Structures are given as C-alpha cells and as structure tokens.
Length: 215
Ligand SMILES: N[C@@H](CCC(=O)N[C@@H](CS)C(=O)NCC(=O)O)C(=O)O
Image (cartoon, rainbow, N blue to C red):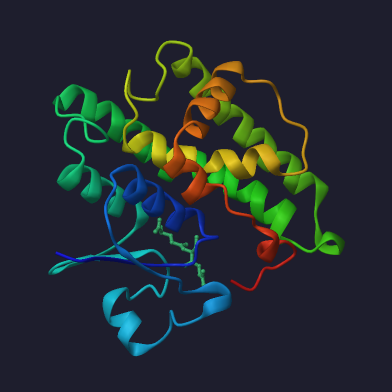
C-alpha cells in the first residue's frame, strides 16, 4: 500500500499530517502543492479534493481531505495504542481536544497569524490583532489547566489531539507578539520539541507567508 500526501510544507494543516506520518514512521510520497507551487485548481486535483485546498492523503483506494480526518485515520490505522488510544474514554478525550482545536483554538491562533503575519504591515489593524491575541490567550489558559494535570492533552501519552493542537506552537512561539506565560503549555511544547517528527514536520520557516494574503 502506498501513501501519498499532497500539500505545501508551510501549511499548518499539512504539517499535522506530516508530523503524524513521521511519528508513526510511515513511508510515503510527499507532493508539495498549493501556495507557491500551485496545482490545487487542476481538474485532477479537484477530483480528489473538491475544495482545492491542502492537505489531501491517498492510502491505497482511500482518498481523504480535512486535516483532522487524515490525522484520525492515520492514527486509527497505524497508531493503535500510541497516537490512537484504544480505550473509548481516552479516545473521547482526544476527540474533545481535537474538535476544540478545529472549532475554537485553531481559528483563534490562525486569526493572529493572518492579522499579524500574513497581512502586509501597512494594512495591519492593531485592534483586530489584539482581539485575536486575547482569544488565543484564553485558549492557552484552557490548555494550561489540562496540562497542569497530565503531560499531554488527553492523558499520559501523545495522541492525535496533541498533533492537531501542537502545530500551533512553532508559530505562536515565534510570532512577534507579547505572550502571557503559560508554564504548563511551555513545558508541553518542550516535550513536543523532543520528538524528531515534530521538529521535521512543524518547525518550518514561514518567511514565504509574511505579508502575503494571496493563498
Ligand atoms: N479544514 C481544512 C482547511 C484546509 C486549508 O485551509 N488549507 C489551506 C492551507 S493551511 C490551503 O489549502 N490554502 C490554499 C493554498 O495553500 O494554496 C483542513 O483542516 O484540512
């Protein structure tokens, strides 16, 4: 079975899949696409992913889009007992954090990234940035409370929930802004940084995205 992943390495949503593929040691072909590479509006690509967005994953007969669906699929298929907790209660907690990331945390931190980093300096709106930072800080406080009790979001082990939330950390910690201290989040970030697959998949320079609203 051959796994193929399409998507530019500078995309946070692609980074989730790349980190999980690396974490599980899954050999695959990576095809950079979208952004500066283009290729995401061709009929062939739209037939796989009608949104024209990245990432898209193919594993044998299965073609899949939506980064969280991809991460859950890889964890369920290849990461039982590690990234995929086998106990339903632990998996429910991983889903809780994964869905919260999709609906609450990622929209907040990506809003900071778009208003502060991707918006050209002359067009930046300080009030909008401040409000996005405040919304993100609330999320970090929620995570900090959990990470005071457990080393990872869903308990004692790294799960897919840490991967979808954890891709935020490289950008959050390097964006030019004043951050409130969240010691348990910072300790968790250090634990993620110990993992080679995190460093290889997530710590990707984003210079090509600075001041660029076009993709
Ligand atoms: N909800 C989707 C969002 C996908 C998405 O917005 N992808 C962005 C990159 S992060 C994209 O494809 N942008 C167009 C491009 O890169 O050309 C997911 O989680 O996979």
